[in-house]
Length: 263
Image (cartoon, rainbow, N blue to C red):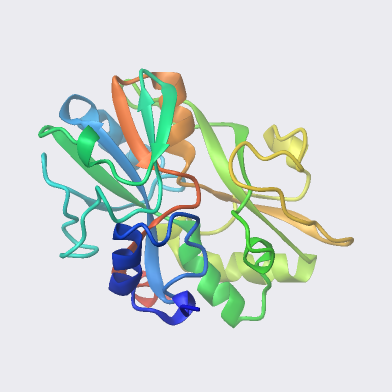
């Protein structure tokens, strides 16, 4: 069995390109930054760039491709955003169309790729500090929820903030807040801790994206801004086409997590 946790990012990307990995990437290539993906046509690229600038907790930009280029500028020089993510989602006019493992057939010469910081990146320092991460323990995808917290509008883009959730003891939640606040480029500190109904989540056992996880007695849910937010926003804003990663299926970059820490 391959040791994906300790494998170099480029080797994991090759397995993904070969479609030997087609599921969530949590826990893979430990120490390397993971990123969400949004691809839009040029006509919507400026509005989305502005949307990210106005909503840095949900959409912390790590890299933007040149128009028509499918190679990241900063995160991995030999990568291809058309093939190096396990699963992609295609949206047309705000409607989810299908999920695929290769988007070469959808690529157009006026498209722009945005790579956005992912909370999977700060899970390594959480684990190194003895804080359990439940979806890794249960070998499933992180639960993600739409909230009643609206993003700041930018051009055609508006909609709700999506959050990811990790249950923790109150003590671990305090420590996790301290740790993740050092990583503003991958969502930073939590947006909310505790009662999910206060942010518009009526049933914590039914995430909008990802999988439900066990919340043990005495634990509290801890919510971070999530890079799936653009998918919820696209459903509201309805551009002609948008391509994204499938929830939990990230781009694994050559950038090391430690370079993103502000302390």
